[in-house]
Every structure is written in structure tokens, then in C-alpha cells.
Amino acid sequence: MVSLLCQLFTFEKFSAVITSAGIMPYLSLPIAIILVVVELTSLPFLIDMDISKKAILVSRVSGFLSLGIMMVISFLAFMNGYWAVIFGATIKNVNNVTAIFLVFMMWILLICANLSTKKTAK
Image (cartoon, rainbow, N blue to C red; front, side):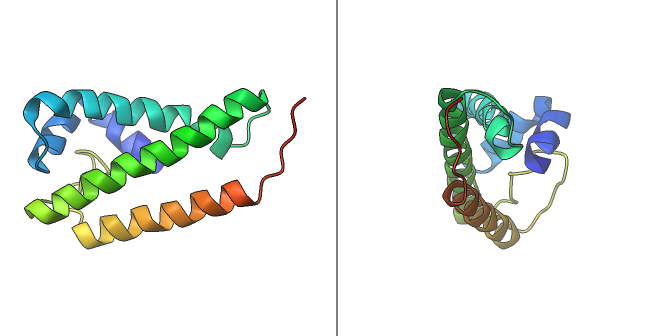
């Protein structure tokens, strides 16, 4: 949720930040929009909302998709020698190794959250 809020606070600059990570300029805005929408879609599962089983499944998949996109962007920024972009333009100059570590930790937390749930359809 922190990365989503940081990306939304400075969304007008987020595509430029993604471009600086080495992504083509014409793809940066669609990737920024997709990333924010997917992160927002993953929130119902992450905050344990009481909704239908299909909506929870979509939310779970969105969580994995958002972390996958963030991982790819973080590795591209690392390979191109730019600062991390997972916090958008709100928190600048985050070390790439720190960002990759944070994304890795988010992967572990997401996998643990998916393994420990035993939700049933209502």
C-alpha cells in the first residue's frame, strides 16, 4: 500500500521516472497506469475484505502481477544504473539494491499470505 500511495501522490511524474529506468517512453505511461490499477485491484485480498471468491481470486492474481511488474522495473533500473522507481517520484534516490530487497520481501509476504488463507465461498 505504501508503494501505491507514493506512486499516486506523484503520478504525473511517474511515467518519466519509469522512462529513466530504461523503459521506452511510449510504454512508460501505459505501464504506470497498469501498475497502479493492478496494485489497487490487489488491495481487497491484502486487507481481507469480505467479498466473493472470484473477486478474491482476481485480487490475488493482481497481487502477483503487480509484484512481477515492480520486480521487472526494479531490475531494469538496476541494470541501467538508475535509481529505484517502485516508490514513484515521491521517494527519490532509493538505492536499487534496497528496492530489490523490498520487492523480494514483498514477494515472501505475499506468498505467505496466499499459503495461509483458507477462505471459502459464501
